[in-house]
Image (tube, rainbow, N blue to C red; front, side):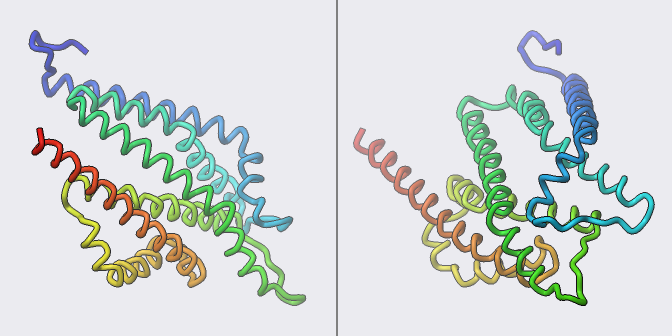
Length: 247
């Protein structure tokens, strides 16, 4: 993009750059989704590992195709996310100071790491436990057979929920960093926070009590980790303030 003599860009130039970066992101997403669709059987075999041999079924002619299409789109979004995040960062960076850029990169990396950690934790620990709980109700006259579209919706929403709740420590640290939260406030309102966690888990998890209960446990742990992070940030800030006074 051409810049003015003072190095700035006009509003129209900013909009043109945003349009270009959105087109690039959409194009990469489309290509990634097409590649994912070509390998959809491999992707589906990965998400059905927790079923331990049970087969998925579909109940209407277009259902399997639409389920595969949705799974390919989600997989494409995961594959293309580094490019999309780069395009977003490249658009925002020129308007940020050096300190703001460092903070932005730290938060962005934190979001990515915590989101991935939440998904891995759900896939390896929580989801198999939840699935085994439901499968124990199968009997000789009650066979467990899962619809492909409903199973994909269930597993995606379940893992997305854990990816989101794992952002809690970073969110509390960020709010503490800008002075909107304190460790004392978080400690004082633990009971209220637990109530909010129960309500939140009932909203973002699939509609069953087991998923909601297993969501609250890591939420409570993440809340305590958030308190520790805010406390460490406060101590660091106090030390910097003392050094400034001494200087």
